[in-house]
Every structure is written in structure tokens, then in C-alpha cells.
Image: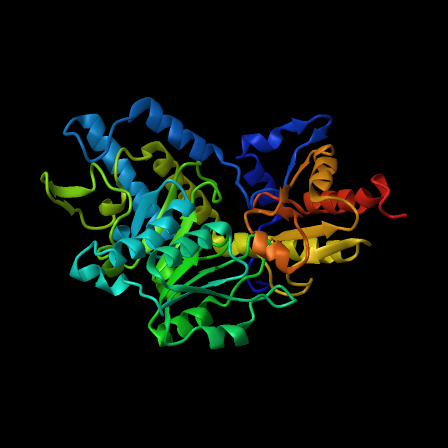
Amino acid sequence: MSSVETLLPEEIERIRNDFPLLERRIGDHQLIYLDSGATAQRPISVLDAVQEFDEMRNAAVHRGAHTLAGEATELFEEARHKVASFVGADDDEIAWTKNATEALNAVAYGFVNATAGRGGEAAQRFVLRPGDEIVVTEMEHHANLVPWQEVAAHTGATLRYIPLSDNGALDMDAAEGLIGEHTRVLAFTHVSNVLGTINQVGRLVELAQAAGAYTVLDACQSAPHLPLDLHALGVDFAAFSGHKMLGPTGVGALYGRSELLNALPPFITGGSMITTVTMEHTDFMPAPTRFEAGTQMVAQAVGFGAAADYLSHIGLDRIAAHEHALGQRLAEGVSQIPGVRLLGPAAGVDRAGMVSVDVDGVHAHDVGQFLDDRGIAVRVGHHCAQPVHRRYGVTASTRASVYLYTTEAEVDAFLNGLSDVRGFFGADR
């Protein structure tokens, strides 16, 4: 990251002016928003794009011949092109979903439906049988774990997982032993939403391809923060969401290699995703439309496209360099606070711009409330990743996550607040 030009302080101030919510005060304090890992704030350009659509273009897409329907459809598909280009995909490889969780379920239940005989000959490649194995990791968000548990239960396949090392990284020696001739699916996160670990995507894809397994990437914590080229990564499927990358809630994206998306049986069916319907049989549209049943989230997709434009204009490489520096500042600062344990890679190790911590003697929810009283917004709980916390002997943690609009002063305010927590609750005695 050091060779990439980072964002300058004056640029960050200009960026912050694009985000109206950052002007808020919480009680007597200026808001310090350190929960972008859960939901990022939205710039004026995204807010305006959604409002302009709602006010002047609102119509159903792909369903009418009138002017408004044509304009809405054009904007809808233009947004798909923007988001596809943003992640290094072709337009027909991006299907809109309502969030990344739905995108991951679309892949998972595509395997279930194929196993049940749906999808014809093209879907036979996705059939799972007893003796087949699905491999996930111990660091997965529940959205990339629970669906695969369900797939195993439906198909008789066995679910296995790559364990975590004490340092917050995947045990790659174990991975090499787990991924083999029986592996049909390898589902893993690019960046841990708890630990900040950046996984070795290239090596994992290499292992899966050698085994003839499909790869499913959770890119929710990478698409907003790292330059992403899904074609170059070589993954078969991926999922990410709008609300984590400056876009609206209610919209996500499923990526799949074109050949695979066209063979995968859809799991949400109804109007708009069909070619022919009789009382006995239905034929589905090609991808990506086959995964877009019913009335779509058009305004949200338009906002998602505007968010991709905004991030592209600034440059993901520069954003990543900025967040890398802040991530190291966070990790180094936390490591110097007595009674506070950093989960995940130590300071000095490459990590995402977030930290999750366990404060000795103080529950994470109390830590979060203490910081909120100072205007500092962080995430508390298990972050939809209970197995990760169980692995490191905690039930909950406090997570601070940064983005392009976060300043060094805000990171320092968090560290100062965190250093006062144990004293306030009398846990340092």
C-alpha cells in the first residue's frame, strides 16, 4: 500500500462535505461514525440520484412501452453496467438481489434445486450427493455459513470448515488437507467482518480449481474497500451489497460467470424472469434476468450505480491506502491499551480498516454505550459471526470500522475513549 498515493487531509475534508449525515451531533458531541463495516453513509450524489429517479423517472422496468418505462429501464441497466465494471465483471454476470445474503442464498439453493432435478441437463453440474463435501471457513459471516448448512441438510453432502489460527488467519495447511477430490463447493469470505483478515483468494481459488470445486466469494467487506476484479480473481460466484459501499439499503448483487449463471436454477420465481408459462411448465429467461423475479428495486439500483461512480472517481487504490493506514493506526493504538485485546491480525500485519476488541471486565454493549455517549458510533455484538467469537473465547466484541471519510483524529478519539472504558466501569482495579 505504501507505493500508492493515499488521500490527502484536504481531500478527506472535501469528501466529508459530500456526506450530510457526518454533520450530525450526538448530544454535545460531533458524530464520529466508525460503523461503516455495517452500513456506510451516502454521499449527496447517491441521495440525489435516488431522489431524481423517484421524482422524475419512477416506473416499472422491462414492462412498458411508454416513455417513463423506457427511461427507468435505461437507468436500471446503466446502473448494472456501472456496478459490473466496478468489480471487473460483464453486465450479464451481475444480477440484482435485495442484499448479499439473498445473493448467497441464490447460489446455495441453486445447488439444492439442481439436486432436486430442476434446471435440466445444464444444471447437472451442480448436483450434490452424499459423499460430496462443501467447505467453508470458521470466519464466515452467518450469511455464508447457514445457507451451506441448509444445502448439506437438503442434499446429504458433508459440510467441513477451514479452521482459524491463533493469529486470526486461516490455517492454510489445514485448507490444503481439507480441499480435495470430494470437495464440490468452497465458500469463503474475502475479508473477515470481525477480524479484518484479508484472505489469500488466489491460493484458495487455486486449491478449489485443482479439486474441480466451485468457489463462492463473500465480497461484502472487500468490494467497498479494495480494488476488485472478479475475473482476475477467478472465482465462480460472488456476493456484495449496496449499503456497505455508499449505496442504498435494499439492493445487492450476485456475480456469477455467465456460463454458470445461465445453468443455475433460480430459487425465487414469478413474473419477469420467464419466457413461456403454461399451466404445466415454465421456461426461464437467461441470466441475469432469471434471478430477478417480480418488481425490482429500481431506485436502489440507480443509487448503487451512483455509488460505484463516486468511488471510481476517487479511486479504490487510494481509498484502500487510506484505510490501510487507519487500520494500522487502530491496531497499534489498541495494542497499547491495558486490558484491551485485539482480535485478529496483530499491528503491522496487513489487515482491513477495522478492529474488533474485547475489553477485560466490560461487556461489549457497555463499551458501545460508553463510546456512544461521546458521539462515537461503533458496532457491538457477535457481528453475525458467532463461530469466530467462540474460536477466540468471547461472546461479543466491539468493532470500529473506517471508510474513505474517516480521519486520523476520529481514530484517535476512539482510541482515547477506549482507553477510558475500564476505568469508568471500575474494571481496572
